[in-house]
Length: 465
Ligand SMILES: [Zn+2]
Image (tube, rainbow, N blue to C red; front, top):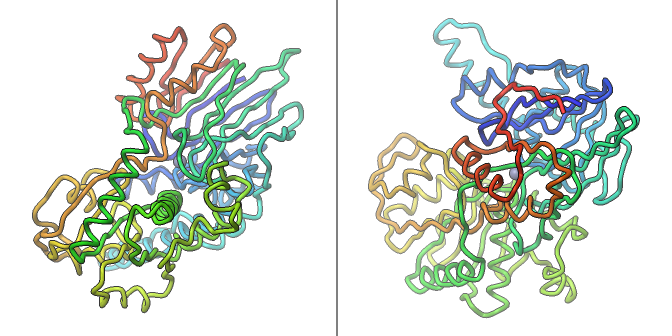
């Protein structure tokens, strides 16, 4: 057995790992690398392996850094199956089309600039047509049902508790008379997060490939954060302001809606209107509604037993049309707007922030990670003057950060995950999907627990197992 790391190696984006066993090539993930525009474009465009030689692809969850280059895999000749849970397949329907649309628009703009400089036009990474064809390769699977994905190779998808439909994947491979148990963690969620079931760690493995995004971090407990969110909503409502929450359309937004609904039910927040202003977030919320089989027991107890919809709090509206989005500007009573994008690099949230940034009654609440140099990061860092659509604005509104909503386990959660493993059996552990600093901190902590061989593979590195 051989494993090669083609992405998500010493970084958090572009996950892509190739397992070769008995001549069969299994691709785990095919994510989009995100970074500086030109470098990202080049890296995503060209595969370091031949997609036509892949025998099967397995996808742990729908996030774009794991799934976003699948249409390009199709474009480069891949025509075999892509196994993923039903919810992941449904979320990819929305996300890959949206990603293709953004790619096409982006290249249109780049080509206008190139034309002005008399340069050759470039092609989009992939088109909506590529995405639609690629989506036909998806085969929806259920949790916990072993499925033969290639001769002598069985895959079982287990709960990862990270986003709806997310999984860790167990591969059982017969090779030279022995069975190798190979675990791929996907992205590991936090325990006791609303909506989702807790992650299920593996027990007996020979090899584990594990994420390490927050390998050096410790999160706050969820009860503190519920109170903080309740206080924020109450405070902004009392002063007659708007609460603007830039959020990723898939996962974070639904978690927020659910939390606000629960706080309403517990009479801990005033009943002010809640708007989700993003067609993609609205569509993703529909996918959540369509997959109650993936919810945890608490969600059933709080809502579903009473036939209530967890994602429709009182005063809630999903805004799809641009005209309806513009009308939100005219609202003077307190309300909450959740809109993409989370890092404020585009999307409708920019309009809401621009229109309210000078109003001290407004609060912008950050609930996720923001990369350096993004508008969200500048505001999080407390910049007093920022540029929006090329114009300068003084920041008079309040800004707050609530990191609780992270979909990733912290160091304690990741250590719990490896703690369940049989130390004598596990021969190799590979830490992926984390910057070197985070992965190294986690490696040290794991070694203290008695695991000897922990690697942090470099991009393109190959290991024989
Ligand atoms: Zn993820």
